[in-house]
View 1: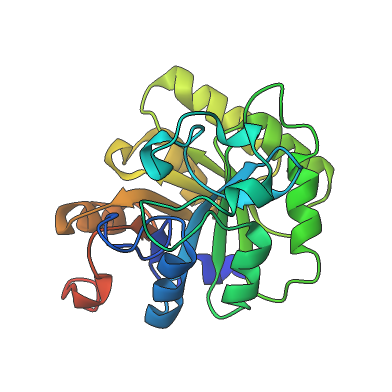
View 2 (view 1 turned 90 degrees about the horizontal axis):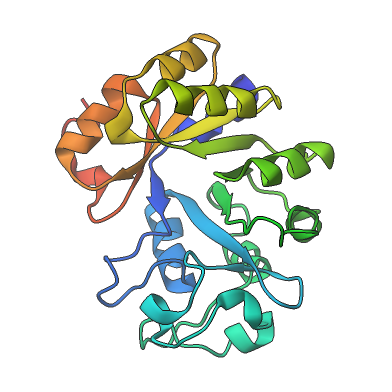
Length: 243
């Protein structure tokens, strides 16, 4: 797995290096710019706009982030690009805008947010936008159908499972996904350790966690996984991280 050693080399900023949506909001070019400046990897969410363009956004609907009713997928990328995020000057960016900003300076960990029965072309569109990009990229999803699509398309990037749970029936589903030949796992930190993750790490599968927001969670991560996805603090100021 040395081909993706870069995935665990530095902390991963959850939805960019935002300030918990005070002035710098999640999944915005401002948050991504801060992460690049700090040297953190960037984790962000991708949705499929109505015109088939991947955009960077977490929620299915627009209410929490844009204070507007309606579903994100009902609007085109151009329409979404006019919407203010959190009342700031930032708008909802496309994946292409993120790639232009990042330009290979830090790794990108992109989570595809699916909608079952409505994702035809989503994985392919993400790969089309990524074509020719020179920086480190990893793709992941909770949604097994999207992972299958990425693997069927021979995605030339590491593909990983985003997951949680600590029950045997959950592990069975996760094992099914890993049979696709996935390269890494992003797991909820507070459901570690567990037999599924222990077995995968013994196989050499890298594991990052989500979402670490304090020192206790950071310590728990590094006792049970290889790297963290964090928000709400600066990991460069953690004395334990450098010890």
